[in-house]
Length: 217
Image (cartoon, rainbow, N blue to C red; front, top):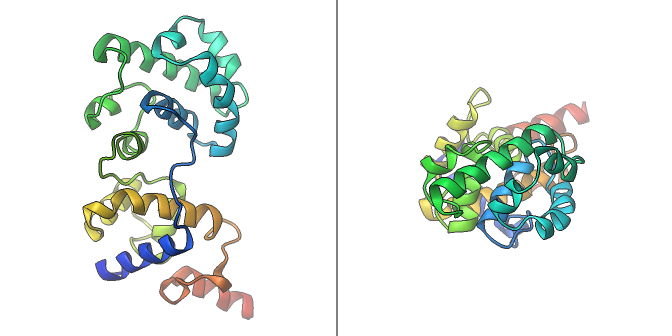
């Protein structure tokens, strides 16, 4: 497994490849970000942005989302996977925000994770992007890159991946690291066709070296 020093170096290299890495979900405030991240589960940011372009013109506040029927919200996000359950969660969390937090998105992790449809990854994204608090959101890209590079073990759970990254990286690197790893996994170290031959991290990547060896045999 990569040491702390090697892990930090890998993140710095990703930063050189993707110096503008940041959240690609389009939003104007913490509430829109929260809704966008809930919608993004098992869905691409590109599709979410297409849907929210019109969605956020109609629904700007928690009150807007509960002023219509569940069926209407479902219809407005129908092109997104799991839209029925996501519409239910959006209305549920909107109720919670109105009743408990004066329609504001809470800064507290425990409060965020208590909202319908909000898990640890979603809470981490909101804390990091909306409130500039150190957090590492482990999505499918971060998990894949961490395991391919040997930052963590293949058998590690998502929570273990997060804890390993938090241990190996300084706290002030956490937010930048998760954006860099997402970009690296989304555009370079892809799931099916990773760009191993042109990867600056190949010398430390056990998976990449294995792939190239198999391709050459």
